[in-house]
Image (cartoon, rainbow, N blue to C red; front, side):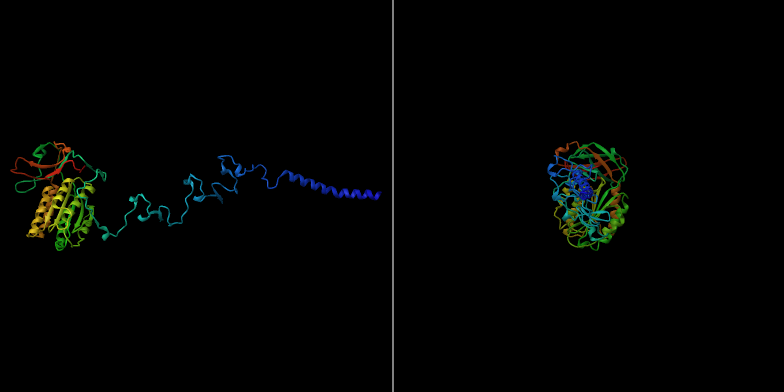
Amino acid sequence: MLHNKLFLIVAIALLCPLLFLGAQGASQTSAQPENGPVQGVLPPLPDNQQPPNADKSSTPAGAGQSQGQDQGGVLMPLPDDQQPENADKGAAPPPANPPNQAGDKGQDQGGILMPLPENQQPEGADKGATPPPANPPNQPGDTVQVPASPSGGQAPSGEINGIYVFKKQVEEVILHATVVDDHYRLVTNLQRADFTVFEDGKPQQITSFRHEDIPVALGIVIDNSGSMRDKRPAVNQAAINLVKSSNPDDEVFVVNFNDEYWLDQDFTGDIGKLQTALDRIEARGGTALYDAIVASADHLKKNAHLEKKVLLVVTDGEDNASRESLEEAIRRLKVENGPTVYTIGILGGDNHQRRAKRALQEVAEDTGGVAFFPKDLSEVDNITRQVARDIRNQYSIGYKPSTPQSAGGYRTIRVIAKAPGYNKLQVRTRSGYYAGQERASR
């Protein structure tokens, strides 16, 4: 009996710890379900239970993100093919390109955005910002062909370099006039009251008048055909002396022509640049005189910054390569209210040269200039200096026509001058203009 009691006591003593441990484990298991969250954190709903328009950006790190993938704290954008429809892709950071690698719009070289080649530009891209290719100084790439303006064309209305405006109606006609006495000496001391302007035979009221040495936009247009090869050195020096004798603020360009015409130096006052352009002698081919005159006048009208415009043309022969006729060339100069043209013809005495002389006279006289025909090359230098004096001593006379410009048509112009102390004064200016045509004015 005693033996049985001892056995029961020992068994109870051994089972009690085991029962206690089992109860504690069961309690812990019931308090925290398997895979449960840390206490105090609200577990997320499954995706299929999320309310509409729910903000999924608060999903804890480590869970799948709807807008991107979290890698080391940097939000990596989804690929384009995984973006939701109508998503704002502008907020996605652009893909990084290594330095000097091609990007979407060009190539980054040393911090300068290099434009794509034209054959890679997107349709409709603004190519105006593309810088022109650089050519070494005085290389053939510096020479560009002056485009001939379309036959019968006119300049568009609007601003040219912010200064000149082409108008359909000419409100004031400006004449640049040279006055000489009966011994062909310049007369420079006349007043407004000494002049009378006639348009189509009717006297006009002068609205503006001045006699000043104002700077001009000057184009030097020189024959570069094969027959001019031996004459060019003397002609070039005469042209440079013309510039040196002119107003220091003049803007000058150079066009060389044979059966084509080339703008070898655009507007400049730099004697060195002009000399370099004149020395580009490739005497060959025919003589497209009328085309070169028309294209040079068009360049003056569209690109000159100065109101007064002049052309000096030097040739030794008849035009034999132009698309324009003499009559059309003169008309084009008047339609576009073109420049005063001075011509120098280094001509012989055959029939072809006589026709050339007639053409040079008509071009000069109809635009208010003078035609010169030196006996030899030694006279050319004095002629260009005389042209410079003529330009610098002109009168500028403005008037508003009494006949409405809307009537159109060609208007003849004649100016007379009378002053005490002079027997006979001759006034040289343009012979007329086409009313209602586009013209340049300040």
